[in-house]
Length: 236
Ligand code: IPE
Ligand code: IPE
Ligand code: MG
Image (cartoon, rainbow, N blue to C red):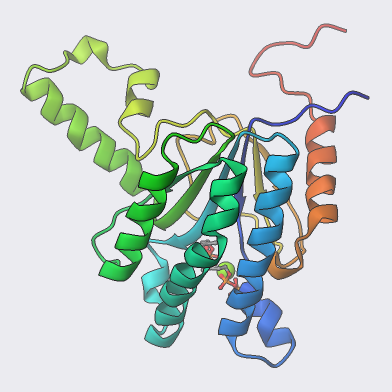
């Protein structure tokens, strides 16, 4: 069977806390191991010629957690951005961020801006990091800006199409082909609602820190067995 490579893979990286709790460790240790897993997987994905990788790093709902955990995560993002920046640049991947910057601290915002700016002309793939991200927020934000442009006469109501709305999202990305969620939870948790309209969904019990290249291969194999009909009928 010829392998079909999905063009856009999105991952809800879940289960860091449970990974640590199972080992009687602090939840933060799970996040640290989760960051390592992401480094491995992101390199693997671009080597496989997958063009876009979107990852859920922090949701708009994750602020509900203890301050200690949130602070740890923000610090971890900063450290991981710094530690992985050279590899990203060397691979020629463009980094983009999705989410609202308002509650993020200045250091994190600066690091995000530096990464986006210095990789903006890269052509070997896109790494979309969803940080302080919510799918409903993204669509609401797009709707507001579209309404403003209609009011200001920049566009007319008739110009509004799915393709146009896509351009008003945090990033104008292709649709998700394969959505992976780890840790045995069967929900979307307000992740890329618009972009996953026709995504193939893959759920695994594996906790995110244990998700390695072999697990990725399993997900890609499952994707290859799917019959993507998009509402049509497959000709036999
Ligand atoms: C996912 O792991 C990482 C983030 C949400 C930042 P969790 O921290 O949600 O891990 P569990 O679900 O509690 O095991
Ligand atoms: C989704 O995981 C968010 C991230 C992976 C960053 P959560 O653990 O926050 O989601 P719920 O609480 O299970 O819906
Ligand atoms: Mg979770």
